Amino acid sequence: GAVVSQHPSWVICKSGTSVKIECRSLDFQATTMFWYRQFPKQSLMLMATSNEGSKATYEQGVEKDKFLINHASLTLSTLTVTSAHPEDSSFYICSALGLSQETQYFGPGTRLLVL
Amino acid sequence: AQSVAQPEDQVNVAEGNPLTVKCTYSVSGNPYLFWYVQYPNRGLQFLLKYITGDNLVKGSYGFEAEFNKSQTSFHLKKPSALVSDSALYFCAVRPSGNTPLVFGKGTRLSVIA
Image (cartoon, rainbow over all chains, first blue to last red; front, side):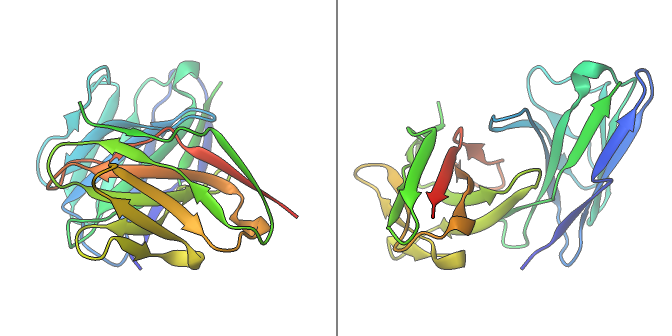
């Protein structure tokens, strides 16, 4: 099946620093990737939709200048949390749309803790 | 508005018994329907999907789901539950094209030995 990886799997950083999370589709090309955020015991909240070679589309309430998304190739999308603060601590999950454009495959997630 | 409802926050079932996790949706047109499972501190794993065709869909790990258009439901089922099935289950719908999935709030399944 289609595999999506994320790196790092967890990260601890100081308040004010920036953190970059990578999302890769390992065995397929993904023109569309999605970034989600999940709070404890809650469902996934869509942050943005990323299309290769174009600007990401952000959901309402998500600060595009704080959560920078780059989808430079058909197998890589990155999310950079800029000037992170403790309230940005969360579980971030990426997802890639498979070749059939039917199924979204999810990465294992990245847990971010901002001190 | 498009939405997915999972009416049960928690489902408890004894090992070996059949299990059902309920899902209903409200989406216009002919949506794509999905079930995913999430284990602690992990991403979502794809279980099965309904796009078109036979209303009964079989997926991974012995799970199946039945699409019922008149009731706008897509309940997840398994004939015999395992303790290892204990996890968080999400129902999701894609309204059309390459639009992102709309998720239910999730149902925590606990299988008791």
